[in-house]
Image (cartoon, rainbow, N blue to C red; front, side, top):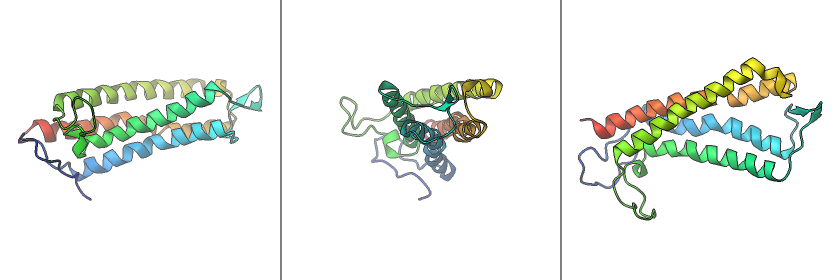
Amino acid sequence: MSTAIAPAPSGHVRDGRPAPRWAVRTARLIPLVTLPSGLWRVALVAGVPIGVLVNGEPVRLGGWEVVYILSLSVVQEALALLSLGLVRPWGETFPRWLPLVGGRRVPPSFAVTAATAGGVALILIWGYAATGVLLRGGEFGFSPGGLALLVACYAPLLLWGPLLLALTAAYHRRRCRD
């Protein structure tokens, strides 16, 4: 499995080119980069003692907090899995089951613009969050071990944006250049 599977020809000469091996590996890596933070959130919701303290006691969540935190983890992982579209056939031709656009060619400019905006947003979001944790980490109510675990689980998210931008550049090169 060194390259992406070519989709059915759409009639456009740039469609169906295989993605470079490094791009396929990068697309597979992105969901793994996001996984530790999602698992950290699931552990928090499940009541695993991960060092989050409120008034010196382990945090207890309930109701909408649980729904929100679990939804955030699912949405994050789903967005990370979308990066596979930059190396897979469904990144060139919309799946037939999609209403209105199913079976049509994905305009490269649409995919490149969306992925670039996402990559830049991720760099800004996680860069801002990392700066806040580094500057005020002790103020958040974590035990020392809990803060170390938080950093270990969330630090990989700093790679998500740059990896997505590199993958987007490969997609653009493959779909928009001869």
